[in-house]
Image (cartoon, rainbow, N blue to C red):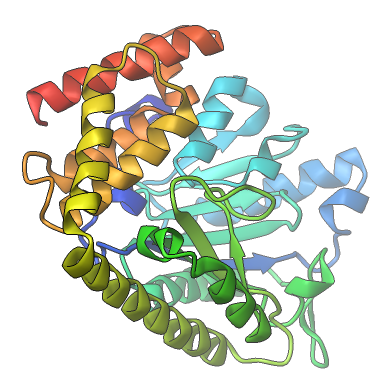
Length: 351
């Protein structure tokens, strides 16, 4: 597998095949780990950073879980390639910054990705389609256990796994579930939802995680702290809260459909009309309109369009993907033309 193979591959977070996939886009578990005997990445000197990278690479090459994985050094990639990987939710936007001595490992199914030398030495990430956080944790735990036998993690009997950021110390676990919540937005309930989950120790983030804005009614719910809780407790807590969120979105959609079906249908088909006829369209506008179309598909209103197609368009129309498809650097205006062209053609073909 090479980087180019990912371009037309169906990304795990957009498959739409997991439980409650009409509302829950994906479930992710991330484990932060550091190797004992090395300073945290941001404090390490250049030679030490290189030693950390090589130590992890040598260990991963012996992993039975990661035999077919793709190993990518950040410094060897173009800026577009790095952004391409961020758009596929395989690494964080922070991993793009200062690429020296950083790497990314992606397994052949595009469900497992490991960031090396982001903030911590290791960020083990497992992504599953739909509401499937328990399975994501099971896989990440198995990989973590295997790697931990070969490397000595920085661990304190009192504090747990030691991490660069104190809020990750403890289990080092962050569970993150991406939700599509258009009905809660339309009914102005999202503010109250945000306040409620904040009091429960969770946080609501944007499309690409921490520090990013919520685009197209997409939100990521994740735990804020990891210390003082077991992994099972953290998973169980976020599972229970997200289950309530899903039910609230479902009931609100049903209310909207029963009371305002004509208005909702009009909004959906206007979005379809714009997407199918526009000659220029920005990334944010495309995501917002595709979000409305996704709601229409899940409500059974937009019966001419398949969910798989809508999911595919979410990722193919991102800036780096457009430039990878075109095979060259495009300025913002050129990307807006190319984006509109791809959307029109895909919607016309219906696939």
